[in-house]
Length: 254
Image 1: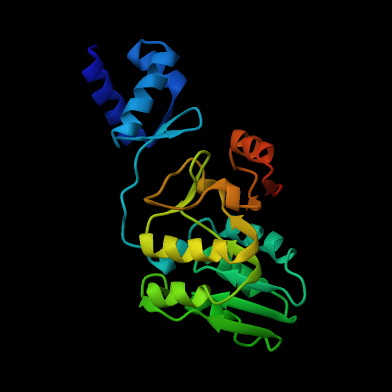
Image 2: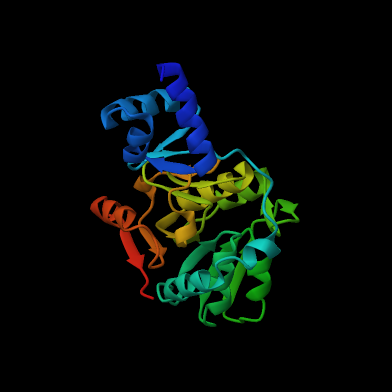
């Protein structure tokens, strides 16, 4: 197989499978793992794939936001368990910010009626908190996105710049060892990036389906993330690596 043919073959396999490890590519292409690593570096530089921990993943193009109803019905038990754990970290008089993910909606629904200030760009989060008399809810405003029932855009971003919070709880589309966390929609990623920047402590809530994924737009790298709450099915190698980077990984039991 010529070098150019090998490049095309690697890209095709990665796009078909979504992700693949160096060792498997080495066997398929009948070259050394070191050669495959060099190939992947070059293909990443050309924008044809993305390196991941121990292999490569396909590039996820920007896509319209998935309907909230569809997202709400996926990985429900994992999201509920992760949210239950996150609620334990909220203390009276905390100022917190919640994004427009379905996971943080579960968190909001489980919050006790204690003195809190909650900032959010989510209509659903604001609605579920409406009857909790001790919780002050501040909405970002902005441009309403019907699919996610969330506010985005310059007004939403600007309003977040006016505040400082103790804790940010956000979810994401992708969790990537080298590139941090990412979103499929750039406008949502920009809002979440503001949320990360306004918080003393950043908590990422991500079930196992998000791991080894690189979505279209990066939210932030691991240097700005303090805690990751995930479930037992999250890849063990990711958990170990993140803990070595001083990320407090809270992995729930079965």
